[in-house]
Image (cartoon, rainbow, N blue to C red):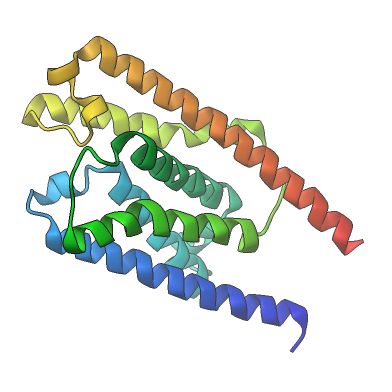
Length: 211
């Protein structure tokens, strides 16, 4: 078995294990959730983990389908890496401790906010086919979180329910919420640029190794 086939098999094995953990956490969290289905899918954490699960599943097991081709794209995989990195960053710096969770919920919480992001970031670092990315990709990647934040605010007005404290306009006011939204978009963009720089550096290193 040559090194290329060995890497391919290792990639499939790693992706399979990672996908199992992500699907398990999502399904178990759905089982544990007491709120509405709409609320469940209104968490950025859930949406980001769902993107991980779909990315790993389709790019590895159904790579030739339209969905598989989409999730095999380096730009898409880097965008997902950005989203789950933000999920882990915000949860562990801002939100951890606000909600007291125990038992299975504590385990699932750490899977969704720590384990799964780490698994996917490592997958992106090791197995994503590196090619040059443009800084413009960083702008495109902010569209999804921007639409999510707008959706959360509009839905909050209708339902009086907000997924995160920093979006709760009723408690902290719209001025503070809009500042929070602006800061979040800037953070997404800056970290996106850092990922682009890292990707392009890895691409250059790989090219030198192949010479």
